[in-house]
Length: 359
Image 1 (tube, rainbow, N blue to C red):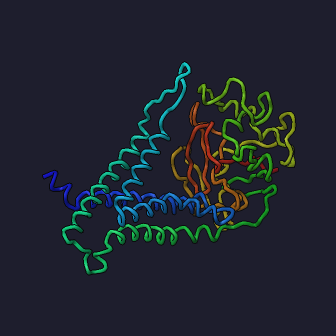
Image 2: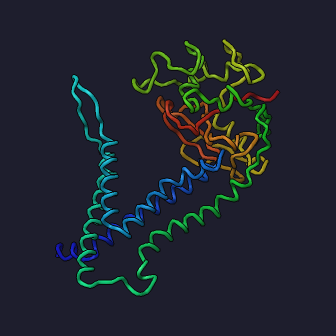
Image 3: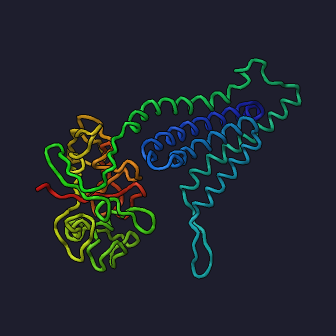
């Protein structure tokens, strides 16, 4: 029974079906993330987000057309993932490698699909030797190509119809100075671009929650602090944030950092951000319910637009003053979601913006 299965078209069907499902998932991720995270700056930045889905689609089409080539490519890629996730280090002058389950979870299924495609290549060669020819009907002859291409195309069309009206109508008045925002029940003054807003560091990213919270701790600055670090499991606390955060050191103009706390500006809370979110230039009517991992309650879905956000820059998340626990802190996204991540973490899209109460 098993021999019969592996001598017919079943291995190829299984491999192609799995590839199509995986490709569709990554195409969804690629397009959604392009609109969510990648819609800023030069146009090529948007295209970068399409690389994972496009690469897998190309690999799927190769596997359908040339199963032997596709099979070996998939096996090689799986092997590279395994090597990437190997924990290689030196112990007593000798190189050692520890197994990483993450690498196997990726490389294992890839290797399995690659083997199935190689079996299909062998079976296809045998079918041709017996006189088999492709079906005369166009759609039946190209059914696997259609199944591979149509889902990503539908995903692109549906997500574009949903997101394009949002990203193409973002309000951007070009003003990156001090902004007073009349929010949902509060009026706040937000810092201008500079050390109090979207302060990009020398390494090319924006400060982590830890760096913001410990700015005023000797030595003053965004560098490493003695006794703190994810390597030793010691993170800044809410008390550190209240005492040392970078916003406290901003001069009144918001453009200059003083050598001692000025206590004019502060780090915003989650609700400060929530109440200041806007849509089409108007307050979105948002209010945080005091819980993480959830969407903020808003009268209108907010957007990444001025005066709170800079639509032409990469940050789509702002760190908040609150901590979730000793390791995790809150951040707010432009579309009204509150989430948590490592205080020492974040990515190039995590930033912050200092605030003060209106006079």
